Image (cartoon, rainbow, N blue to C red; front, side, top):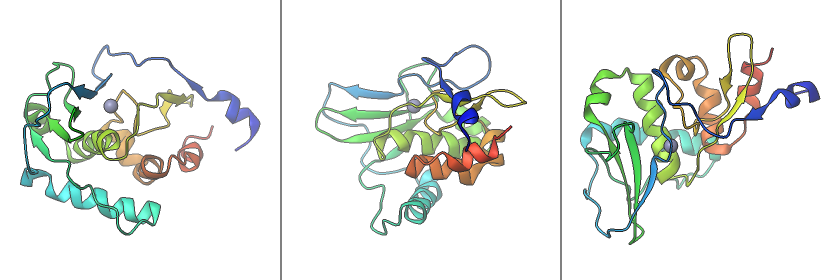
Length: 180
Ligand SMILES: [Zn+2]
């Protein structure tokens, strides 16, 4: 990467929420109550859990990586704008809640992008990263942790690069993919 492309990178301070893009500002929510809603993960998400763990091991080399005690279930995200949320409770427990109506209407790539974003909060302890890079066909997100969720097309076209960024924060593959 040359210095010119470095200069082109900039960070927006907040994500716009107008229109269709799925914006998830503050979808990492600390709850004052102690008890989470679910004890185990809905079997709908079993394959996604397996994928997340397999890819984490592949990207980080940490063969002991597991999602652990973070149940994933359909339920009330408690915000009409959130299709998914990572709840963190005062006793230290966590869970991911996904809005079923959205899930049923989304394709596989969009589902995985949203769920992995939520696990980015809950399991990888990541905050939002709204870094964008301008390209010939519009600004490109440089993180799976963008508050505006990486959409189905973006994710499917650069899945390996986004997954590398998610687990290692290495944006080199994304920069190469979006180079002018
Ligand atoms: Zn988020």
